Image: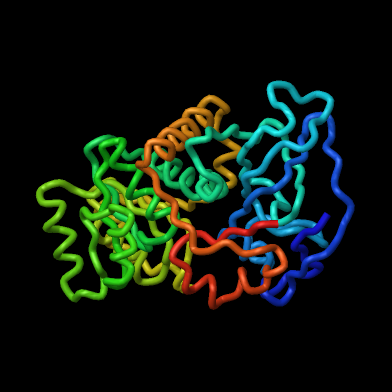
Length: 326
């Protein structure tokens, strides 16, 4: 089979190449999946750089989420059949014609959800739902997030209102705000290149207070989120797009009894109970099938074009998730 693999950590467009290897065989509790489409996530690229929390053994094949059809089943696998369409997230090696996944990680996908949405349905939208519960945000409360036009941010802005949770969606420019509007996210968007953006946030909230914050930027931006939290508020840090350390005014922590917590979705997905995972998965599938959740695609690239697909230019200019087709 063909796969996009790397023999050393480094810049993805430099170290990735398409190579031939033996088609893998599933163990007793595994299945082999024939890939239809696979997502290129930021954490996939960070993994290839060698900067992620987990480092795979080299040589390695990229990718962690895909939609495909079951091609072969291990002897102990029950409840699935060959040819069944499923989605898988949190595995390794999905940038290939075939990959192996534990049977317990398979999620059957209804026909109402097309391949482009299915290929990116779990990782980022699931992160949004996990963040809501990680921060203990209740119906009627307020949550503020930066980088709201990112995959997690857009999912949060669409899914949180279904739980009667109010979001304030911070973006850096009018162009970024338009990305939200194009998805039907029209309420409580604030552009931070305006001098009075913090006053705009306070006007939106009124007499209420903000209970939770999601920081994907770090640096000054993360500290600004903390300054807008109400007493006993909590912020989840899940990224550092700025490349800068989180800048926090201690007064905002001390006098508001604020909590700042690190959030790593892939680890939390391993820790939550099977019942909770199934509950959250059903919520995602229902919202995707009924049109509430929209997941834009920034382009579909053939496996042979992997260097272009992961390039800084394509990743910086994308208006949706970049997908790979083997």
